[in-house]
Image (tube, rainbow, N blue to C red; front, top):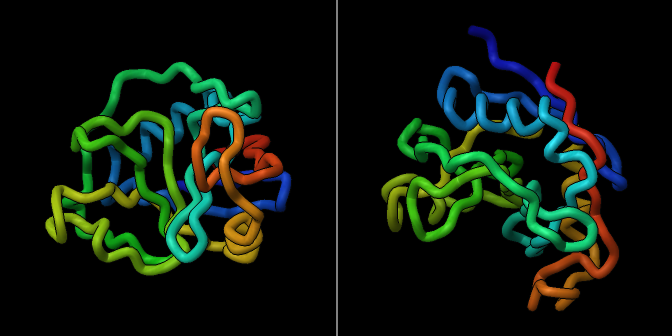
Length: 165
């Protein structure tokens, strides 16, 4: 099966993705289902850490956590690396806890790869166009905001829609 594509429309511009259906089928299917269900519409990038990553997909603009489906199996052992421009599933300390949240790597974050410190974070896509938009998001002023104690954009960075093509 050929890899699918997606377009993330943000209030900072569009980000085009290649989804790795072949290497991360569980994570891609999960992301596509959330996208097709409209889950990501109106969510925010709630965690932005310059020279590391930008994270979103779980909170609305009022900082309310959105309901999610059951967590998925971690596919971090798929051979893909957390390199600049790749997307990976966010999770808690529980290896298999990923649901809707994802992050975009701003640099090569090898310490997030499988086996480098623990099971790792599953890469499932990469930015093919719009890395300049990701870099714009990475440059927004951050700090404490509402229920977030740090690293939250001081003005909302919204994910308006995710379209699978």
